[in-house]
Image (tube, rainbow, N blue to C red; front, side, top):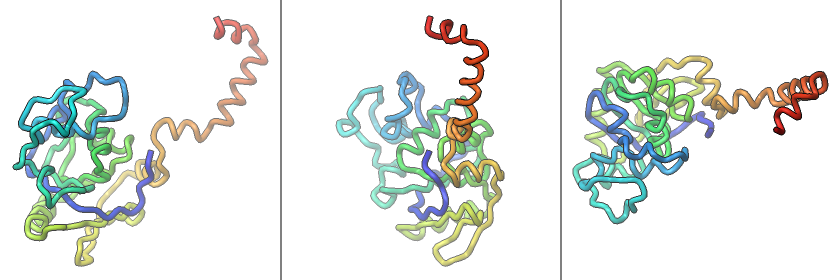
Amino acid sequence: MQKFTVHKGLVAPLDRENVDTDAIIPKQFLKSIKKTGFGPNLFDEWRYLDHGEPGMDPASRKPNPDFVLNQPRYQGASILLARKNFGCGSSREHAPWALEQYGFRALIAPSFADIFFNNCFKNGLLPIVLPENVVDQLFDEVAAFPGYELTIDLPRQVVVRPQGEEIPFEVNAFRKYCLLNGLDDIGLTLRHADKIREYEARRLATKPWLAHTLLA
C-alpha cells in the first residue's frame, strides 16, 4: 500500500449527497476476481452516456460531458470533495479500489458511511471529515478558482488552503500510523514474519506429522 504523508493535489467537486457504492463502482464490474483495473469504471453510470460492461474499451465509449470528472478543468484531480454520507450502500471494497485506481489519494466530506470509511484506510485512501459549513466554503472556492488545489498534511492533521489557512481534522491514531507507513492488514501481519516463521518451524519440529498432512 502506498504511504500517505503530505499530498498536494487538484480538487474535484462531486456535489451530490448520499453517493452509494453502486454509483461509485456499479455491480456488473464486481465480477472480476482481480483487485486491479477498476479506475476506468469509477462512477461509470454518471461518467458515460452508454451502459458499461466489464472488458469494454473506455476509449470507445461515450463520455458524459456534464459529469465533473470529464470536465477539462478537473483532469488529474487527486482530491475528491463530496457531500454528506458518501459511500453509503453495500460494503463492497471495490469502491475505494476504484477511487484509488482512478488517482484519488484523499476524500473530503461532512460524513462517510462507516464501512466505506474503514475500507478507505485499508486501501491507502484518506477520508477526511470536515464540518458541513467548511465543506460548503470549499465547494464555493473550487467553483470560483480553476486549478484549485489543497495540501493535506497527515502528520500534522491539517488541510491547507491555497492562501495558507489550515483546517484541522481528526484521524484515529492507528489508522494514521498505517497510512504513514503504507501498511494494510497484510502488511501489518508481515511485520511479524520472523516470529511467524519461528512458530511454524517449532510447530513442525514438535509435530512432524503435520508436514505430511499439509503435503497431502
